[in-house]
Amino acid sequence: MSQWTASVSAAHLARLLEPGPASGGGGRKLPAYRGLADGVRLLVLEGRVQVAARLPAERELALALGVSRTTVAAAYEALRAEGFARSRRGAGSWTAIPEGHVLPSRSLEPLPPDAAGSVIDLGCAALPAPEPWLTRAMQGALAELPAYAATHGDFPAGLPVLREAIADRYTARGVPTMPEQIMVTTGAMGAIGAAARRVAGFGERVAVESPSYANVLELFRETGARLVPVALREGLGGWDMDAWRRVLRDAAPRMAYVMPDYHNPTGTLIGDEQRRELVEAARAAGTVVVADETMAELTLDGDDPGVRPMAAFDRGGTVMTVGSASKAVWAGLRIGWVRSTPDVVRRLVSARAYLDLGSPVVDQLAVAWLLRGGGWDQALATRRQRARECRDDLAAALREHTPDWDFTVPRGGMTMWVRTGDVSGSRVAVAGERLGVRVPSGPRFGVDGAFESYVRIPFTVSGTMAVESANRLAAAADLVRSGAAPDAESTGLFVA
Image (cartoon, rainbow, N blue to C red):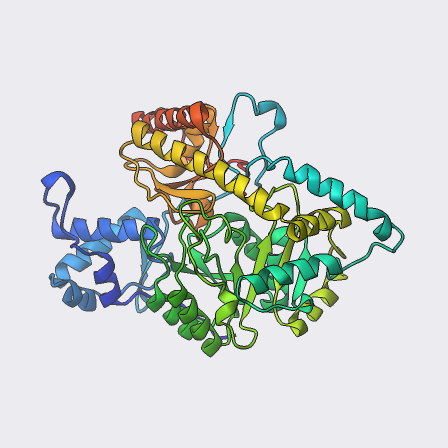
């Protein structure tokens, strides 16, 4: 396998550094080299420039920025002194994270039940079940169970009735689908894991959005994948297609994992044109795109956005789609699925014999009951209403109590990506646990320690609880500013 090293061109770095490396806040003019060093450092911490990316030569960057080579040399020296760049004679300079910089823990543990009364847990982007629809679905499943109890109960591809219902749902969304194109899995993570094992072997490159879903990044690390981050545009600006085309061409990843619908953690919704462009670029590069659509139906503002599933732009097996009942209905309903070509699905089913054999029959029957009888849409409407209330209350509370924090409110999904002003998101997370609020810090959603100045806020609390959450986070930020907070360290925070 050929080696590949990320690099950032002088022209691209100059664009990222606009409006200029020498500007300072509050009207204060920084020395040119200091402004340049600070700009590059911020780009690394926010994941907009990859860790271990080769920096442009001093002369090239000086020409692109319109500054002297001495300025660039001094900036690189400052970055090396602070640990954000490393150099080797004859090999140039590349971005880095300082030694001792805390990376996310791999031991992610849920909040103990006995602590739920005193601690606000913002680690999980999940809401209580939308009753009475879950109970009705389970009752419907139990009514149909006797016919299945008389069989062996082993359905590695999923119950035929559920595969047909899921296929019909895709067809209704404008993507004609046969039941043979569906494999039911144990949640979306089971679907992504199956896709990763099928497509990307140990040591293979996998391109991921940066930031990306924390648990999926851990899954890829555990399977030995070599992650290639591709930065999202700021705010909710979507994919940087120039960056995607460059990575697909130069790194030739075996697989790309993307979440085009209300992306976790940022809430970004990708438009049809970028979806089409990515599928075409991936097909040309021989890269399989795994499109995670678990949030696709969680539109919270206005009508359906009208975007088409990624598979609608596929002409021959480039896209593997992942779906799930956990976000649309309830996280405790551990049913997900993969949509692909019949041949790929047959191979996934064959490989499943060495893993979990199949998903729980009762849960599958419950999801089939929801999809066939209209209960899915009713449960989804309840879920949307609750998530909308939580989102709006949290956004208002954060604006009031943490006015220096910056975020863009997404129109759907379950999460919001929040920049924590002048304090470290990791340190806010640690201090927050001391004050009774748990929130995942930005580095959990990045590769190699990026996104230090962010936290993810899920839409899971409302009313007075939202206000109290913002109060505690504001107090945590004050604790960090005062120097009384401990250094950021790995916690057992559960992220979902």
